[in-house]
Amino acid sequence: MSELKIDVRVTQSDRKSMKLSVSADGTVLVEAPKAMSKKQITALIDQKKSWIISKVKQRNAAGTLYNNLLGTDAEKISYLGRECVLKLEETEATKAWVKLKNGELIVYSNDTSPETVKSLVEKWFREKTKAEVEFWIKCYQPQFDQVPNRIVIKEQKKRWGSCSNKNNLNFNWRLSMMPTWVIAYIVLHELCHFEELNHSSAFWESVEKRMPEYEKANQWLKDNGHRFLPE
Ligand SMILES: [Zn+2]
Figure 1 (spheres, rainbow, N blue to C red):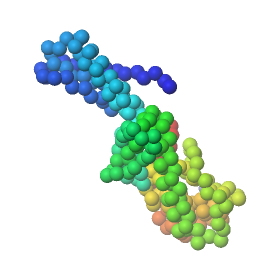
Figure 2 (spheres, protein in one colour):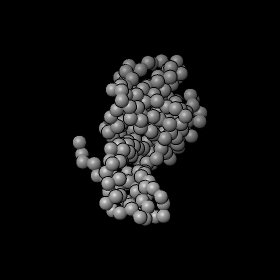
Figure 3 (cartoon, rainbow, N blue to C red):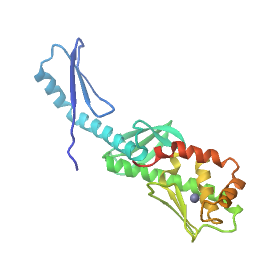
Figure 4 (cartoon, rainbow, N blue to C red):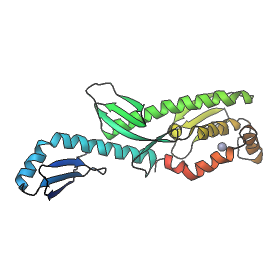
């Protein structure tokens, strides 16, 4: 475990009572009445210590997760191209789960450390990606003479998918963050490598024949793809 560093910023004004909040970057903001002494403020902060620690941990977990999953976008997470807010709910139960509800991706866990939250969310995306990939393979496979030998959803830092000469297909587990029409293109692209294991004009003709608007997806990936890869 790394040490938890907490920045506290105290401001004093005409208010009647003290207010505590934790900003998006994990700084603890203390708004205290003018009349309150430093000693009183410190004592009150001390009383709220466990609340502050859990809030700061939540913020840090969220920050780390966003950074790992989406690069620079620190506020939102994307599922099938729709933006969701990532929320952490600390539970008493030892069982942990992830649920998408009203545009929020909620992680329920009694351990809200960045490592745990990240692995829970990654597992959730892996399952969603697997379902999406299987769906699109089912759609497009009948158009090919060959079938996939093995389909693996895995960590890929720089690519979305790949196809080997043994018809083994690999897909990046982050795929389900992207719009479903882009996932369809990525799956079709890899299936077309059954026929051409290169990016020759024959290969692109084989893609275009089955998805005439494929260039739109290609362009989307050029413009947005980097946001879905780790830095
Ligand atoms: Zn390719």
